Image 1 (cartoon, rainbow, N blue to C red):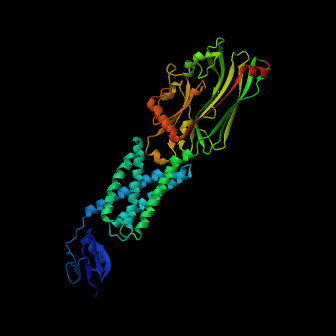
Image 2: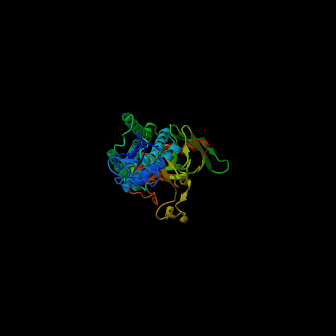
Image 3: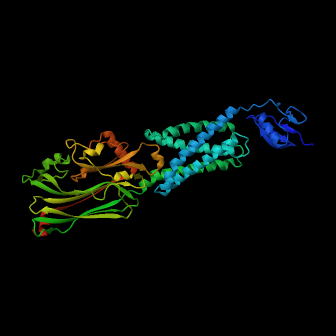
Length: 486
C-alpha cells in the first residue's frame, strides 16, 4: 500500500514536534510515545521502526530529539489553573451576595460584574490545558491573558481597600497570594506573547479597559456618590394634646403624641431611639443672679445648657420614658410611625414646665444590613446576661442591643474586620441615655468608650450614613392645669 511518507518537523520553542503527511498536519507529539500514538491513528504498527527512513523523515533532529521538559510544563499548568480557579472562587464569593441581595441597582451590577469575571476565569482555567498543550484553539492564550488581567485588577482593588485600614481579615490570606500569583502569571504570559492569534488586538484591549472602568464606576457610585446625593431625612414631631382632670383622683391626664416620618429617598434603620416626658422645676432668683450659673449649666450639671437671669438650679424629673419604634426596625421612604401616650401628673406637682422629647439615631439601609440578632434585648442588671451585665455600682440600669452590621457592598466586607452596632438605652429616657455606636469590636459596655473607640465610631457613622433626628415640645405646667380646669 503506497501512502505519503510521515514527516516529523523540527521541535518548536516549547519542544512540540508537528507530524505531517503529504504536506498536511496529522498531529503533534511531545515525545516518542506520543509519536507512536499519532502513527497508530494513521494505521502504522506499534512496533514500527521509527528510524526507518523509508517510513519516517526526521527534520531538525532524529528520534532522540525531544526537548520538552514535561515536569516544568505540567507544573506551569498546575500553577496557572490553581491561580485562575482560586481567583474565580474569590470573585464569585465576593460578588454573589451583592448580585443577589444588594439594595441598589449599582450594587447589583457590581456583583454581576464580579460573578461574570469569575466565569471568565473559569473558562481561562480550562484554556490553560490547551495553551500549554497542543494549542488547537487560537484564542486560548488571549483568554488566559484576560483571566489573568482580571485577577490582577480585582486583587489589586481588594488590596488597595484593605491597605486603607490594614485590618486583619481571613480574606487577605487569599487575595494577597493571588495578587502575587497574578504578577507572576502576567510576566509569563508576556514572555509567551499570549495575545498572538487575537484577530483584533486593539478592540480586545479596549473591551478589557471598558469592563474595568464600568466596574470601577459602579463601585465608586455605590460607595461614595450615592450616599452623599441622597441624605437621610426624617421629620420628628412631639405635640401635647388637651389635658383632662381625673374625675376621682387629683391627677391631670396629659395626651402626648410622638411622630416620625421618613421624608427622604432612602430607607433607614432605627439603631437607637426613645422618648421621655420630664417635669422641670426651677428656683427663682429675685436678685437676677441666675446667669451666674452658666458655667455649671453648659457642662450639664444643672440640667443642660438652659440659663436665665431670674431662674437658677433647674432640675428635671422623669415622668415617663420608653423606646419609641425599636432598634432593628426600619422605615421606607414616605413611611411614618406615630405613638400616642397619656401621661398622669399630680395637680400638686411643683413643676414649672413639662417637656417631651423624642430622639432617633438612624442608619441608611442601602449602606449596610444589620443581623437579626440586633433585635434581641440585653439587660444590664441581669447577672445571666454575661458580658452585657454591668454591676449597679459601676453603671445605672440600661438596655443593650448588639448585632453585626454588614456593608451593603460585599467588597468592603471582605477587606475590613466585622463591624458591630450597639444600641444603648438608659431607663431615665434622657437624650444622653439614648445612644448608638458602630465599632470593629463588641465592647462589654458602651458606657466607657475611650477616645480611640469614639474616633472609630465617628468614622463608621460617616461610612454607614448614620444620622440623628430629635424633636422637643415644652408647655408651662400652669397652662396644663388651667386647661384641665383645676
